[in-house]
Length: 362
Ligand SMILES: Cc1cc2nc3c(=O)[nH]c(=O)nc-3n(C[C@H](O)[C@H](O)[C@H](O)COP(=O)(O)OP(=O)(O)OC[C@H]3O[C@@H](n4cnc5c(N)ncnc54)[C@H](O)[C@@H]3O)c2cc1C
Ligand code: FES
Image (cartoon, rainbow, N blue to C red; front, side, top):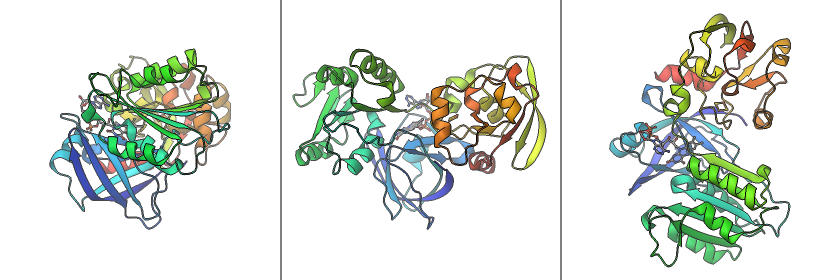
């Protein structure tokens, strides 16, 4: 995985109810190459960053689609509603994320996709890329409160008509009277229809709560391997996340930080994650807010100091393995609390275009 900055021109903006569909074109000749299921990070005026999943498969001409749920008073939602028009230019970094296609080992085991709201975006991109070549049966469960939330119902009904191995199940939580939709929640409907998921793959995108409940339910009572549960939680931006509200403790840790070629002594408040402390110091921006899906918070330790740290979890190791140029003494700053183990450490922040962009835009 590598990430760069890109200029994207707006080809089209369509507002339907609470969702905006944006068609963008990457202007750089080298293009923005991504895998279906990944997301980019828009850099907005004031240094705000917002993550959005690619809603269409990769195309060599650089054109792709995003689906944005509009939140009242939201920074990007308001830009979209009031200002954004054709030919405007947006700045983005990416691609990020690991909720990409995992070729199934067993063609007779199902692939389940669970979406809530605009969580459909990355699954739409995956489906459109993989449906024509995948032989396994694919089940898409798309949840909303009422029928209007399933804003691309016709599109998926047509796909289900065209591909015999594709099944589309809209699931409504507030409307029990729709004969062509299930009533309830996506994870319950999926569990009801599949008793044994021991060889299946499940992709879940959208509400973090749905993802956590689905993970517990399907790995617990439906025998799904946790390795085969792939998810992207659409968390609110990190500046609004719980990380932003962890109060720093009075104690402070002193360490050496090398960023953009310059090595300086820094005093960071303990108690928070190293990512948050470095973000507050204007040295880093952890795009995914510590959810171990972006890798933008990578830091490099000296060998001796690296061995004194609490060892990385399996998910941290997995993400580090996917990063370009990752070395043996790398860690994710979002997974390390600022405490005694970092006191006196000498760390390097590998050149991070995200932090550079943030500083330029601020
Ligand atoms: C990996 C990833 C991929 C994402 N992909 C998409 C995508 O494809 N489409 C999409 O619409 N969103 C996606 N998101 C969420 C997106 O990044 C923004 O958080 C969201 O669009 C709100 O941005 P905003 O600037 O409009 O609102 P903000 O300025 O961030 O927030 C405005 C108000 O809305 C509330 N709010 C913000 N986000 C949410 C939320 N998710 N649920 C409930 N309330 C919220 C806030 O609490 C606040 O009160 C993704 C997030 C992640 C981490
Ligand atoms: S902030 Fe995204 S992996 Fe650490």
